[in-house]
Image (tube, rainbow, N blue to C red; front, side, top):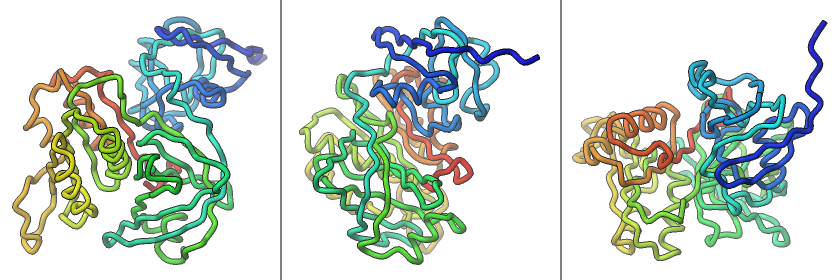
Length: 349
């Protein structure tokens, strides 16, 4: 005889803010929060990245399928939960200091039209989309949208422009050979093509209640949301010190290096450290080499007074998180990340 599913609906309370919301039977906590405009942190929504991890203070949940690197058995035993995969069995009290009143703009589905396709390196295209004139997409610099493909599959891409540079959106798309979406982008997509998008999603955006100096860490096309943050900082006239570390295998992977150099002239508080891991002799590279996240450790052995915004391949983001917190005294709550999941996890970013 199987146990009956708890009836619900259940109440979720988030401390210290005191915000609360209801969850329907069988619904994950994060899905309910997004549906009701509650700004909990999250990234992939698939149990792969760990961005939504927080502490459960009271109540019981059951977790759906997730990756152990996002939530280990030891962490779960200590009361940590992934809100994207946690289904309440009772009323639940969570601790999450990142919940805010303003962070969750309405999630919308809308058609978009391809306006330009520009190939900026051998495997990266800058795609610009026009959105409906009568339906504004409100978002924070750093968030992402999802393409809804004809078969219902989804692909996620960060917006590379800050909202003030709208109303269209700019996306940086790396070719993943064999990828259902990127193969189309690189071989058949034409200007004026109509695509269906939904967003905004994600909790990767600038925390403007802090004046701490920032490290902006990007690998490959992880530069896209970092570019949006830089545009936002420039638009706001921010004087917060920021250092951008952008890593690639070879110099051509830093496909908007000239754009960054142009910003430096207008943003005296921004510094830039490009890092290349696999330069060849013909590249004539004379700059920093090695792993980009390690360059930060070399330059900032003490990050205790900083914030870090990191975006790119999971191995880069996960390594940075571990090294900065364990070895550079970065407070865990000051590490903000958007980790690209693999195509198996439904993204081709």
